Image (cartoon, rainbow, N blue to C red; front, side):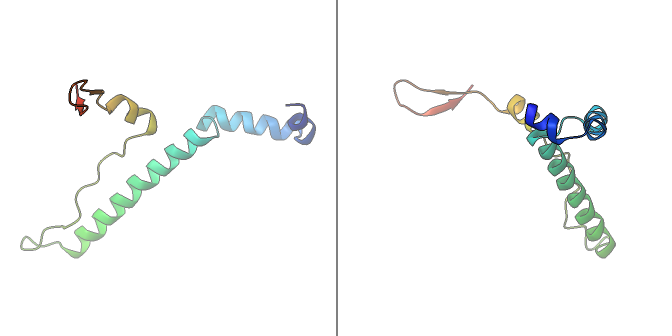
Length: 94
């Protein structure tokens, strides 16, 4: 922490604090959020391009409508719990 404070001006530190207050903490979680948003945008663009090319009734859009991409913190909530059967050793979902 001492090294960081000696190498960063108080103005730059205040700017980073303001940025984190608005955009959230900088780190792997922030990067994962940005990647999920990019994934959603690419899916939406692909869907729009498919709709522009395949616009008549005889040729429906081959690109599915985009869905919200789950965030890392949501994946842990959605994952079913698994349990190993003591007798057979197989993994079973609860």
